[in-house]
Amino acid sequence: MSDSLFLDVCAGKKVPEKPVWLMRQAGRYLPEYRKIRERFSSFLDFVADSDAAAEVTLQPVERFHLDAAILFSDILVTLPPMGFQLSFESGKGPVIQNPVRNIQDLEQIKNPDLEKALSYTREAIQKTKKRLPGSVPLLGFAGGPLTVASYAIEGKSAPQLLETKKLLFTKPEIFDGFMQIITEFTGNYLLLQAEWGCDALVIMDSWAGHFGKETYRDFILPYTRQIADKIKSVTDMPIIHYANGASHLLSCVKSLSVNVIGLDWRTDISEAFEKYPQQIFQGNPDPSFLFAEPQTVRRQTEILLEKVQDRPHIFNLGHGVLPGTPVENVQVFIDTIRGKH
Image (tube, rainbow, N blue to C red; front, side, top):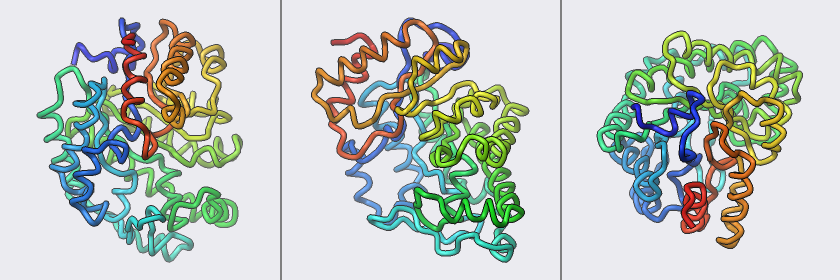
């Protein structure tokens, strides 16, 4: 894929136009997404339908002509094959009926054949690749080991991560045992996505920012490092690492063998550029800025362009596109990056 702006920037090259893609670029803000979503009563059934997954993966690329597509899936798809009773409930998000809290729970985890259990992911990748423009790479992804493990420990979305932290500090051997299991599955799953046809990989550690720097460095980062190192030992495919709320962890993340670091909106990107001039970053406006008037969206994007200047950089938001985001403002954001006014 010699004419991909995205892959060129991942390789540290200066390009004539800045590449842009968006986290959660396929989602509820798009009417065409909502139309397909209505066909499925279960979100997991939606994700597991390879035709639907391929279709919604392509929707934002076709609408906005983005520089990368990201496979439509979910960070928790590895959990059901491992024996976790996962469902997505309206108003609650993911709910797991059998969370990990003790050694007996750990012993109940299955060792599945991920290639067989997630064959629908392979099919979705292959169907998407057949329809993607040749210059647009497909990104595979997985949740960071901490983030995936925390859902399985908490049993639900729990921003304070109380049960996770309790397990870490009171039963460290169980926490470590579970994190090792999740790390192994996550690394294998990402390598399968590479084998199945993805062109780059993303590790999304949504809950990493809830830990202090020393705790993250000593008890969380080593598992992510195992995954990144495992991938790099097999392929030179680019890796993007994104951690939410993690500006205080940047020096830790910088030590990973990844190509691009995604920044959330809490991070001062100018300071990041100054401190790590050779690092390629992705991001990082607050997704809610897309609710502003179009002229404000345009001006704020121009400010970011002025900060980035000619350094290799991937444009994105500091988190995923929010439900209800005006589609026309997403277009303004992208057009401004590309110099269209």
